[in-house]
Amino acid sequence: VKVPVVSKGDCEFFYTESEYYRNQCPRGATCRHVISDKQICAGEIQGEGMCHGDSGGPLMMSVGLNPTTYFVVGVTSYVVSKDAGGCGSGVPDVYTRVSEYIPWILDTIFY
Image (tube, rainbow, N blue to C red; front, side, top):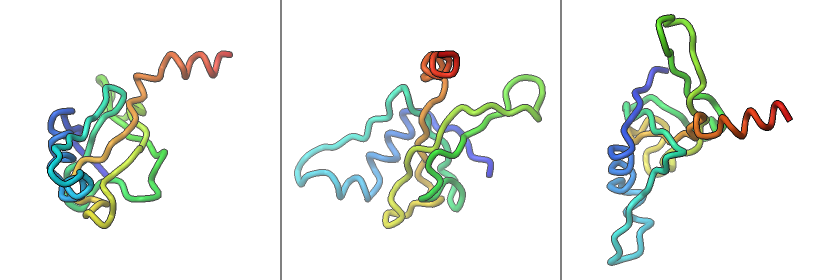
């Protein structure tokens, strides 16, 4: 499935304004969903994206001149609850940003 990468600001807006997260916010409080620099959002296409059980799966991108070469840029982390319209609900999916963990990955595999 091809899904677009979503900016951090747009992703935070989607999550903060979603009915699911508004219902999680204590009455009278203002809640804001924060996407960290160690995360990347993709999706927001109705009917496409990750579903429950997809955790740990890759977000891959074609980078450079060769469109058939793909790199893992994210690892599936979370999506809005199915009860809130998850699984292609139109709310971006959140992935762990692999580039933020390259030093740890290299230290671990070359221990």
